[in-house]
Length: 164
Image (cartoon, rainbow, N blue to C red; front, side, top):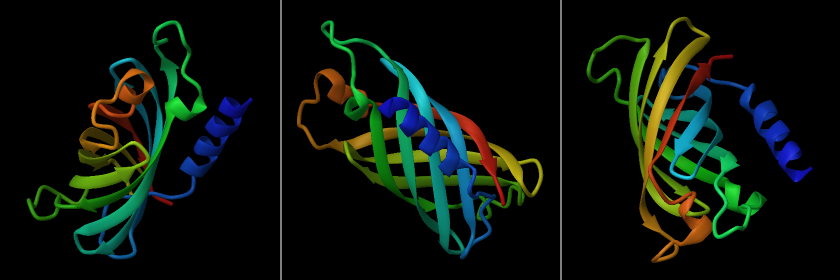
């Protein structure tokens, strides 16, 4: 039941806002799928523009399919992660078009401190696609084992971006 409630909350929160980066006051929302060693899941990110090339936001992810470890099944706490993010939106610096954005960034989550690199392309003012890869830079446990490995490894995301 907790899984169903968490998934419903993530999906509802995902349809609030998003867009290609335009600078201060800009808001974007991305909904996607995650792929990593040991499982796959869903993710929602939202970013708010602070300046012409700087944004902050939040990310929430949940693993839908997770491998059992030593005969034990992952519980909700092992599958979920929440992060605060800071991005440098540098698509306009390269002059590659208003519809395309490149955003390297840092994130601080419940499991680790990490970095990410994302690419976003908008087909219209309200709809686009994105892809993002993330890695942990420093984990909170010096040697993550078992279910701790789920959120302390390379993660690849792909999904849609919205502008409301």
